Length: 182
Image (tube, rainbow, N blue to C red; front, side, top):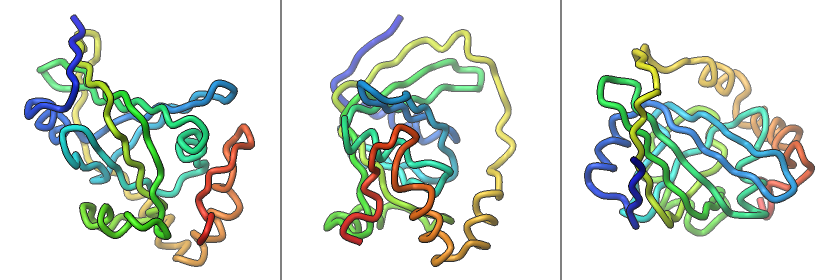
């Protein structure tokens, strides 16, 4: 049975810390919905009502575009081990970029990761848990190094060129704001 909470509790923080994979979902009234898996050591719980992740360069930048135009975001974790649970965070998200005044304060919470593009911050409005009884069990084998090798090969200038070419608008033509005021 689903339960709702107004904020993250210690048990929720512990569950998040134990997971190697999370999902983000965003959209606007007129756009495709975007659901993205995230990994690596990219997520931090900042407090009971706020989480953030270091967003790495990808083939698109849908999350930033959707947040700029709508702001709604859901994040989800699910247990793949013997103790089933699904945890969802509902709230309002925003992208924080290097040129933003809060970048340095937020960025310090994360390790250096290849291809870092921006930070995504979620202000939590509601926390939901549900059983997860139908989620299969899987074994974690480790992180892929594909993104790290790709980003290292591109280098800083190559990543900037890639952002200009591939990360300025969503698949629906919505601007992402990635390089505004840069």
